[in-house]
Length: 173
Image (tube, rainbow, N blue to C red; front, side):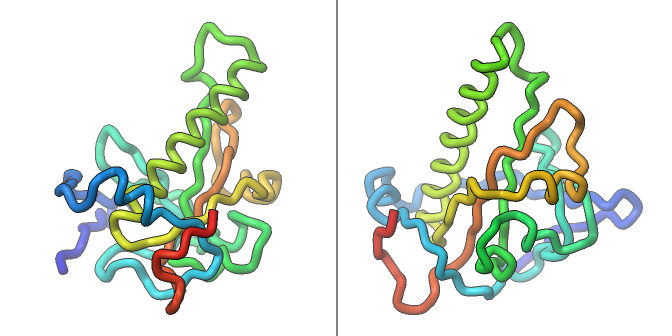
């Protein structure tokens, strides 16, 4: 398995270009998709930086180091999040929503992050992984650690991992 290079001068990880071979159909992914809070703590893949917290910069395909500290335990109120191999945290940038009222911004942020979480869940299903969305996030405790800009808000977190033994293909949510 190849490793992903880390630039030690900038604390950036350059990600490879996405390679999305067709594996299963959407209907198969929907059938395989499952929410689970019983995840194996085993790493998802070797050679990928697991320590710390990174911000994904989609246009440049980079992970930017936010903190060298393991912040997983702060991303949800349940114990299993601290042991999961990956926690995704969605942060909404309200400056990107122009010409809408504050109420509409909140609604649109919820719709957008719901679509993103479902897309992540379907991708994980295709890869044999399970997910659990964490809406109950202690945002006041997590925000100082992630250091979002004043116009950004933590929306939700999503736990990703391999199913614990015996949990394969059981639809739970």
